[in-house]
Length: 149
Image 1 (spheres, rainbow, N blue to C red):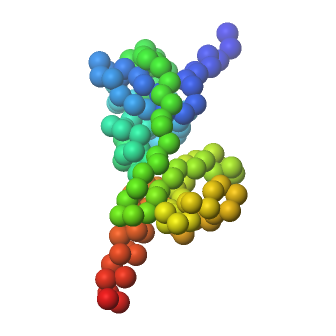
Image 2 (image 1 turned 90 degrees about the horizontal axis):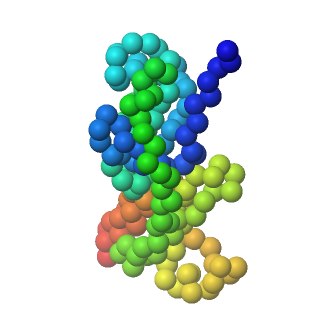
């Protein structure tokens, strides 16, 4: 009998795990994780579990491991298509883009004047790897400007 292939969709999914609905990303089989159900093993099927997409993008998640015999404690509810972040913060516009090389999100920070040039004629003031980092960049800019006033 061949090995059973464990499949969950790529990207962010909604699962029911141990009776609770959670957002998650299936990370595959990884060494160094015990099963959260029985506490045994050292190689498990792992999920990063998180409260919100924004918190996950900022690195706030827990990794749970499940042995093959305990994957029945994970029920796939469906795939989540998160909305891209487009927001204004302290007069700057932050727009989420997808990196063409890695496929991961990154955040472009524009002045309102720069955004007005349109997609082909503008360039961002700064780039950041998370929404939190984008806000920190803008905050540090404001701190620097206040220092020179």
